[in-house]
Amino acid sequence: MGNGGRSGLQQGKGNAEGMAATPTAASASCQYRCIECNQEAKELYRDYNHGVLKITICKSCQKPVDKYIEYDPVIILINAILCKAQAYRHILFNTQINIHGKLCIFCLLCEAYLRWWRLQDSNQNTAPDDLIRYAKEWDFYRMFAIAALEQTAYFIGIFTFLWVELLMTVKEKPSFILLLKALLLSSYGKLLLIPAVIWEHDYTPLCLKLIKVFVLTSNFQAIRVTLNINRKLCFLAVLSGLLLESIVVYFFQRVEWDVGSDYAIYKSQDF
Image (cartoon, rainbow, N blue to C red; front, side, top):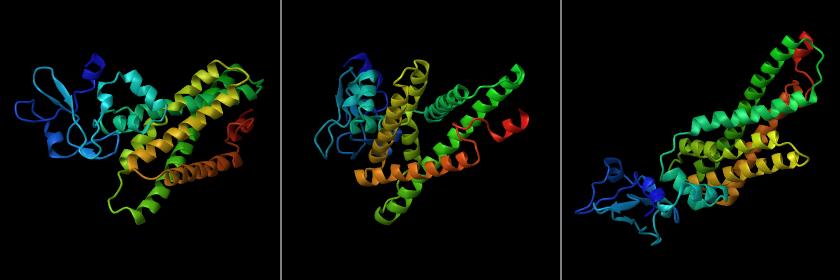
């Protein structure tokens, strides 16, 4: 195997006579998933002590449990961008990624910057420089807060729909914590907002819409892979999130806190 494959194999060692011992967590329960059929697996591969590694075959579908442990991270990322379910299962179930919070904050900063950029671009101000500087800084914090509230509303809409729907149809309680992590990770497309703004051109509005569609598609796939439910429920869940998010956006527009407003209430009092 190549170097990229070996670096990704550290978390899935198996056990057998004359082989490397399995980590306690792996032997205690089925902590991995087959990327093809989503069945649980106790190990991803077996180490024969002499650098000979053999990928575990799934007992259900008779295919490798996780072929991506041999792949270079760039290939895995490309497959994730293409929204392949196998790549999502590899990332969500068979790797240890703990960047959910940092990625969420960074995505919110990107979205806040986009809103702030639109606001500054639409405003013409004749106030003193210090007041402008203070107002612009406050604008950015305000845009960050609004973006965070809208994303929270979007997630609440998704969780509420799935909780009501799955409560009546699924015996085993779904892992909403894992779903939250999956949604945060699958929102990585928002990072493309910054390049779209920096390299501004006539097609920037179209690019921003395509980025939105890509993020929603990634969220759709994350829900489908995490909960193993059909496409119809995933679509309705995303739609429910968008509906609640739209209600929050409408509320901010009513109180003149939306991105397109010329000035917020505090500005009209100060200037």
